[in-house]
Image (cartoon, rainbow, N blue to C red; front, top):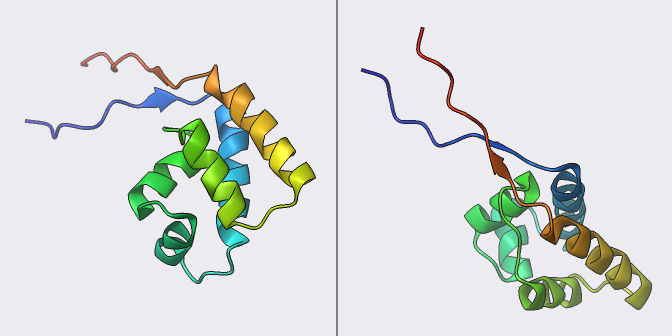
Length: 101
């Protein structure tokens, strides 16, 4: 009997781009390690990991709070908000399960 695996999902390019931006945002906290970076941004490590992968997205207000916590300039915040808006309309799509052979 096979193990149960989590459904694989196809993540949009917009979500992948936002995930990369969130990773940069986390690194800008100057905290050492993902757990410390997540704490500096006010979120659990597992949640930050899902945001970086594009599997999930922060809420708009939570995202704004992270931008402030990271100390971004106003123009940088605008760039991040535009990426968030683009990703918001592109949720991950479940991939069909592989056929049994």
